[in-house]
Length: 185
Image 1 (tube, rainbow, N blue to C red):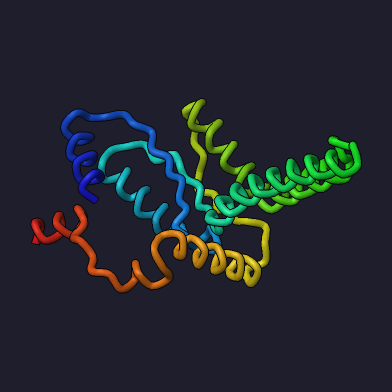
Image 2: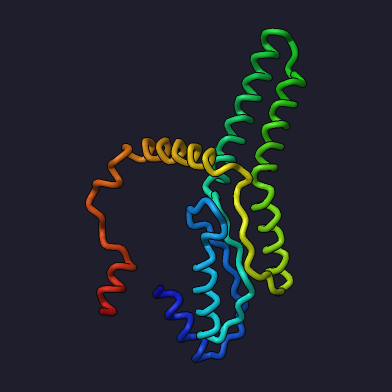
């Protein structure tokens, strides 16, 4: 909020001619759940005299991070498989291991195809300074599977960051945002 207030004042003062694009991944399952944010940003641009060019709302974006991690894990497993196969059988380039890795990567690309495609389209529009409109996409994974995978991911990440409930129960430090709102009231 402080940045947007500052940008609004600067835009009105200097009559800025900026194109504004948004990329929203707020942890929702469906990309369409980012629509209120897009409306807020569009209204902000109208009020500030900026050019709203559209945005991309991504659902299930955390799964892209999980897939990035899994690809690294699968590559490491494939390398180990090739190493052990080479030591045991003299075949350091087992075709089945490479095909399995290629299949895993293909599955990840298919699951993320909507996000990949729309992100590329947004990048092209930004580079060409063209309108993008508001678009929404998500991981191509049924919601019940997405929720299960996301829960497992967050539990594992939480355990690596000091325990499952530590962050929930610890005393929170006031953030910049909290201090800003107290100052404004």
